[in-house]
Length: 222
Image (cartoon, rainbow, N blue to C red; front, side):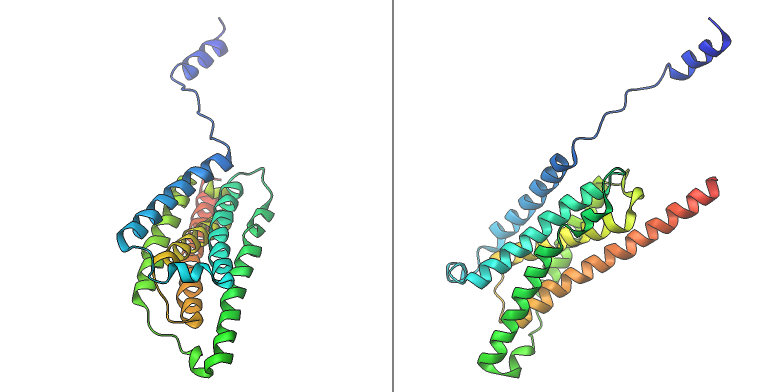
């Protein structure tokens, strides 16, 4: 055995095989199952909203709820795809159509209320419950998603963090709709879509901070 062979043998003696990551869709499904479980627990604790059956007969309300849930699901898939170096950065566009439908239905609801009751409909009431739930559940959900991707997220820290924030907040808003009654469409727009933007903004700032740290680390190690 040559010296080179001996060196290779000694260096590789304690190496352990690296476990391959599961496919991104499987990992996304696992995280979505975790998020669904948390939301189901919240619904079980608070109970379905009193007007739940009535709201299900309103097509615009159903479309709004489906669009918010779809936004969360698609943002989750996008986050897991974006964490891989061989995937297109265009995955970040995946949840945008659903998000556009969600915001559009909220906006159309506001316009319909203005037409029915006048400008007073544009003044939403303060809803600390909405704010607390979307932030209180959305941020931990987003954080758990980014934590799952912590070893790969350095590839695209900002897009992954933004998709994580959108996933957590949109799913939280969809869960909130199941048990929390709102006074009007303007209130839903402010406290659902508005708090979603807050969560996304927080994760965006986190992603940029992570990106700067990775850049500084790479520069220092060069």
